[in-house]
Length: 252
Ligand code: URA
Image (cartoon, rainbow, N blue to C red; front, side, top):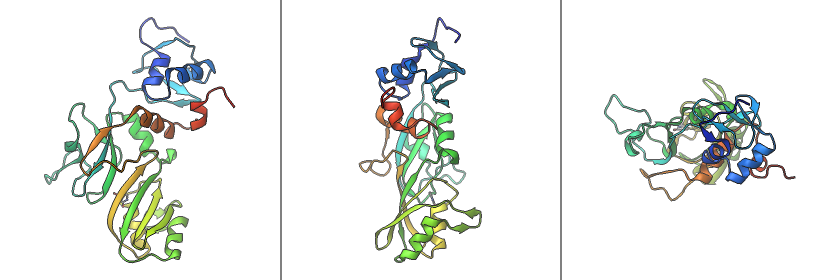
């Protein structure tokens, strides 16, 4: 591996992006699970997180310096686009404007609940790309009480005009409230699925994105992710590295 005189220590970069404590990151390097630009890294190596490609178990990590990620509880009536031609309020107006951030995926104007905003394009890509399969969980208040057969249809997959949906996790939480978890993120997917089973959505709230949930955020409130949440998120979008492997390197 090419030695840099400048740059940041690799274990520090790994810890900063939330891969685990400094000690955990050192163990990952010792176990030869970390590569920099395709070569096995050594402890103490200096890297440039802006240009070097850092991977754990072959999965390239997102190391953008100065990256911020907010978790927002989006209220109804706010649009997810960066600017709206009709002058409607937008989600970016609800969070600090410097550094400039973008929403990770979209929620319909009338959908409420958790939305991530970040300036980290790589993280956005991983969270929205279907191959990473990050789960999104919704509570859908619907018109009428869906039968068990209707719930089963959600679980098995539903033919929509843009093709079959992947099997969803679905259950009836209350007589007219469905808890549904999907990982595809097609346009208006939950609304169209509920429409297809004959129970149109009256209110839709996203309550979880992968490992992230927060019942205490009021509508319109936001906060930055904690280090532990960043770690969980990095794990959720790091292919080939299970949670246990990253927390307990070299054991088991
Ligand atoms: N599914 C929908 O139908 N709308 C959303 O906003 C999110 C998921």
